[in-house]
Image (cartoon, rainbow over all chains, first blue to last red; front, top):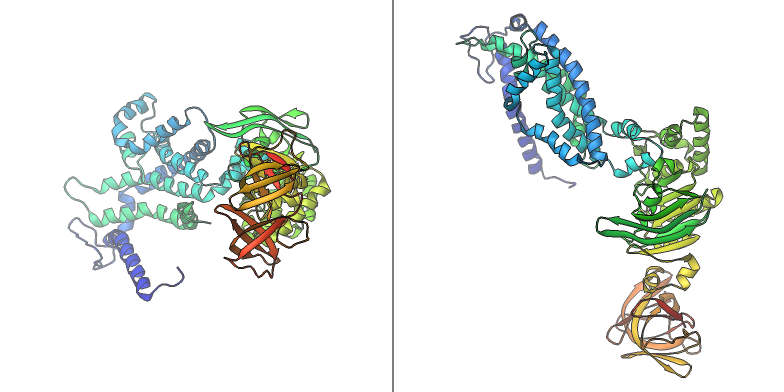
Length: 275
Length: 365
């Protein structure tokens, strides 16, 4: 379509703005709430501006939530887990997309099963397994469980990304003398770079947001979101401080997303539109 | 450089036979064209040499070596793909250098080879560009360069011109032909375009439904098609066919079907004669509007169904009787219009007869 009527353009913008407002409402709400004067009686709501901007809530939240320690844990876990998860997803996704081997379909569906079964359903046997391995309350418990959890989506995602490459690209590399490993590293990985970076961003977000596993498997190595739990009292909750803590926890993901947003969009659109 | 031999090659995809008992000997340095419609097995035959598909039975030899079980990279062949398959993240230089790098060729050697190939194809100025920054024609040259730089035993080309516009296609096919003559490397070229096949190949292998229908130099395939399929596929505009009754009258063969009646001198009939019914084939360029004294076989009468102006000449579709249709090439300024009564004759020695059951060629009269 080369020309759009004015009404059509207006309608498009109206829809986009409406959707954006719906998406942004809770986020703005949390930021505004974090600036209300601290206290359990404080009751911020929606877009209402606070009477005074209580910036010191952030300092208080940082101290009270022991974010220095929980951030360290989250960073260590993410620093190991994201590369490990992405590399394994790339290698396995490449195999499923390009190689025909006995049982490949069954194995792939086993991976997909990981997308369907919630972690909560397996948490009890998992706890005993981790305890048997003497990994309770260690970084490794979080790293290994998160990597295995991410692989289901990662393999599915990377297989789709590699399948979107023209088959002739693989064949050209084979004829040019590249081994499977060289074809993956020199031809297919560069081709799938946007998808790989997108996977890394999504995996980082998942790792950073990890709450449940940290709660079950660690005591001394709390992750950042698990640190937020310390703001909840038994009967009352200090909403401005929780909100400030939530903003603090969300900032790293925001930064990562801003850095990779261009690649992220390209990755999300891979195969969706003609290049 | 090497000879390529297919020896009774069969390729099946599940229940479907893509190639049936395919045997062909391609001498060293020949430009062989596989031509046929979609699904004829020509690309499969090419991919089998490349090692991109495995042979179900039979044998393929490159040089003296049986390559059935060799990996593509061990076959020393280069291939130009229909969609070029250039590595999108690499520059033109890196694309050309990739196969040499995989062979661990020293850096200086690589540069020399790439430069040589780039000079041959006049793409020296594009070496630092990425494929997305190139036009279709330039990409095509880079794809050729990537094959050329290898100095392989055999070149395989899978419809490499099909993504180019008509003008560039004509220009490039001449260039490829010259290039092949220069480097004299055995080349197998796949196309569905019979004009491309006729203009480029030393020999042409016409394929249909997984079967090699005929192989020969372009003139033989055009002038002496082995069967109805080859006769109809090679030549543009295509040959017209009609099934007619055949009766011997002395040394004359009378061909008759409804209003259509032709008598030809039967000088070259097969020893066992002709069946009572035959398929006659006439190429449009061998059919002319009737004019006494030109020695044409005929006349054949009919009604002009359509008149297509082709520029240099005009193609007239003639309906004889109820269902016999012939195409006749006439001068560009012919006064014939659709609906006009038309009489035409056929060049002597250009009337093709085929067996209606086996569809094999019987003779040319």
